[in-house]
Image 1 (cartoon, rainbow, N blue to C red):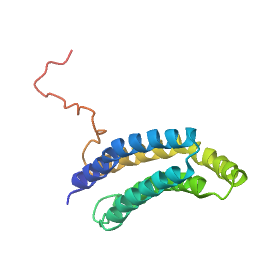
Image 2: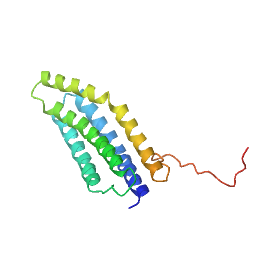
Image 3: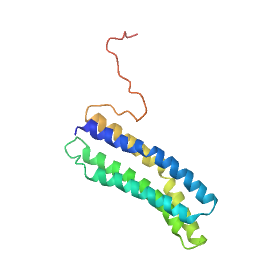
Length: 155
């Protein structure tokens, strides 16, 4: 596996979460609106398992041979652990014994969600840095890669 292939596999793992996250968020909203805590816990648990699978896969990849690979791997795993923690909190809300406990866990959730932008920015910066250290450009999934045309006239 090359550094580019590793980076691409991480990006593919991120991208593969798009639909499951959209589905989970819709279910969470519906279960929350109906106070269906068993359903909420189920969605949280399902997403925890999905994310743990990604973490396990990442843990089994040796990134040490790539320049900056170990640092990148740490950031990537922390990113997936953050997402797992968020969905684990939904599970805890669903499993809470009473409304007071749910409110306490919900307050904890707001704290976690306030870090989301930082976690995402750290991940993107790490992906970009890893790519630069290994001689390629990181392109976000779904974004066209701009390739300079050396035959194009310069103005």
